[in-house]
Length: 455
Image (cartoon, rainbow, N blue to C red; front, side):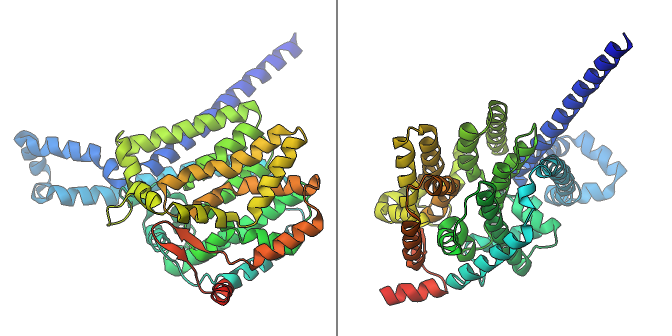
């Protein structure tokens, strides 16, 4: 009887502990998504309503004036500015710290179960640094460009960003701020370190899966936009979103470990939805698939609520992103060939590897593998009508390419000599940034020299 009671008590404790962990995880996700999805003017709405009541009521104003003459002499704008600096920003900071520390605690517990991330880490880190230096010679990452400047500016005060294209991409500027890597120079360094980390994680994924590739093949693959974009236009949060995604795919399944990385990736860049959803639906166990679906629904709900349920306003910052008044759809309709070229240069000749691997898997009756490759590589193309930088957003299909390379090597879809020859030619083809609003853009480095020579 005593033994039975002991087991019952242990079960009750486990259930209570499970409920507590779920409540903590749900609270962290909820707070993070609310902070990320709420621009400054939305956070001010309840305070503005309260001030409207105060100023509309002579009795309340007179009573407050008796308490504080300074209050009566202050304008509504002065009071709102005081609320921003003394209430809204500190609350956002505290909520952000609580959420990120909680989610990282859940996630890092899971990392302990992934020894392939640190066993032999020094060799992989040296390789990642060497490859980064080679890529940096191809495209010199000398400065922040385009929105990279805006993200660096945002890193100085990330919690008071108004509506626009940036505010939902809070995580990387906020991390830069908390780590002391804010401002132009340090934020540039932070961005480049994340690119090295992404390369390290890709190397770890191949090693975990027993795939050995020559350095020429790896560097050639890394001239795809998903890596080289970090040298062309450093400062964007794409690589931090990809880092969290890669960690999600590298660690074992657990109740909250991989879901924590998924939540952090979503909070870094909304485009990560088109990486996370297909990967989870096609590669995760049912429990975690359902968890990712709930996370995605919560993120979307928070994003809509952050714009006070004005869905048109939510999308307008992406469709109309400059002073020209021309939408992304209009740019795409005017430049369809340029958009298609942007998609092609995202992976250059490695598109062939992806398609051949999918065809090979289909012929080998491994249709789930073929579906996984195609879904992971092609679903991010849904972003093309909503964004002008087609070469960049096509690169969000990079994990499909990794799966394709793995399958092609393991099942000899391509002979090793063919892979090497294709990689050498691919390495010699200049990688460029293509936007339907800006055309083909080349940046200082060896690739510009090669392009000029070819032209």
